[in-house]
Image (cartoon, rainbow, N blue to C red; front, side, top):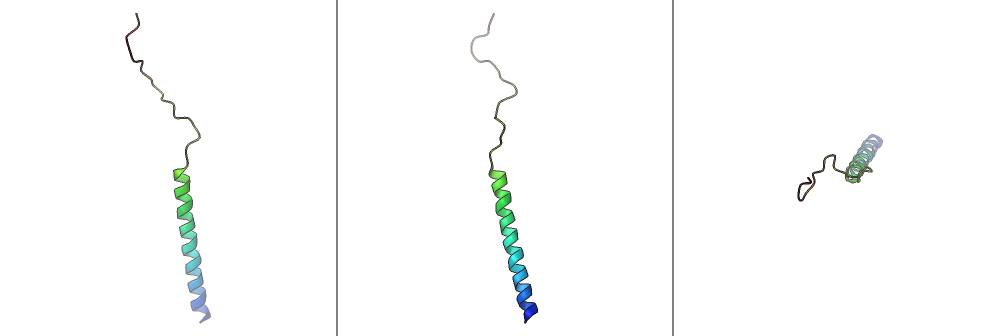
Length: 50
């Protein structure tokens, strides 16, 4: 009986850790980047200059 309880407790702890890791990964992927979103190339609009 103690082995059964130990196996059940181990599987519950492993499942809780897996769920916690999944939520942590989702939170990291949902984080906004720290660098500004500035385009590398910009094109002028309007009449051409002479």
